Length: 148
Length: 201
Image 1 (cartoon, rainbow over the protein chains, first blue to last red):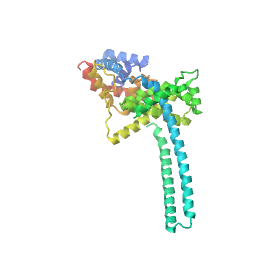
Image 2 (cartoon, rainbow over the protein chains, first blue to last red; image 1 turned 120 degrees about the vertical axis):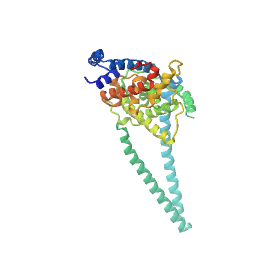
Image 3 (cartoon, rainbow over the protein chains, first blue to last red; image 1 turned 30 degrees about the horizontal axis):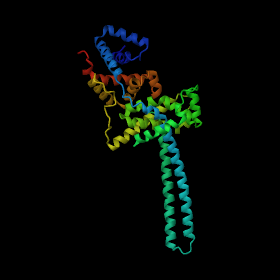
Image 4 (cartoon, rainbow over the protein chains, first blue to last red; image 1 turned 90 degrees about the vertical axis):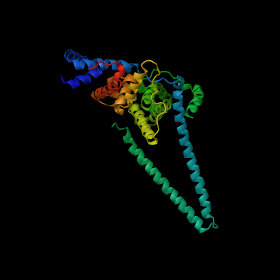
């Protein structure tokens, strides 16, 4: 049994990480190896110290409202999504009606008509471009969840 | 501002009936089947079960109460949105943990980009007078570990998961968990050695 392997086992000795067979191996080795015996004692101290480490507890109120807070944020998200869809439909509809009336109006100068059409064309291209980029990013994002 | 929202929400919370649902006779897998059908009430039971674990793991990673709270709640929201891709035949927590871990990693990237220093760094441990220096040294040691070593230390010592459970949660073989712990402890021993009263070589 090599030294390095025994040292790895010693790291888990006081931590409940060893099988009884592994423990027996370490115990046997410790009988004859002073260096590992010291390592074993140091690890024991480290283990005891680590067990006293505790993360600060937040105000207990936090737990009482935690779940409701998650729900509210979920609900708010749904609210925002519905709101945006509604706003977009209204905007498109209103815009469409407005543009139609301007274009159809014989009194509108030709240059203004061309300007409006160019503006609309540009807007559509921009929306499609942004949507396509978003979709592409989302597809790639899936890989983020793959373990490295 | 977020804090104010939470305080406001606490009043709403009292009127929301299902926030008080306590472990009904359904297993976690059964609950998750309901969640997949869009039952927010069932999801609430899952949130209650894992909220503390999620919060403390995030706290271990990001060192700041408010960020840990936000990130853990964001993870529950993201998990709910992605629940369709969850396999109900498998345990929930390892799947959820990946979402939480990724959000924490994204948070690190953002913080690093903005060059911010976390507000409560070093003060997220309980402030006891005794062994203060030793604890500070250990905490600094934990800070210097690689992310993989740190996550295992957090799961083992701050959430008390067994080696087997850590292997399941992180999706790593148990041998890898063991050797990560070995190298992490070696590092901690070096930085906190003088406070631990080690015998001379």
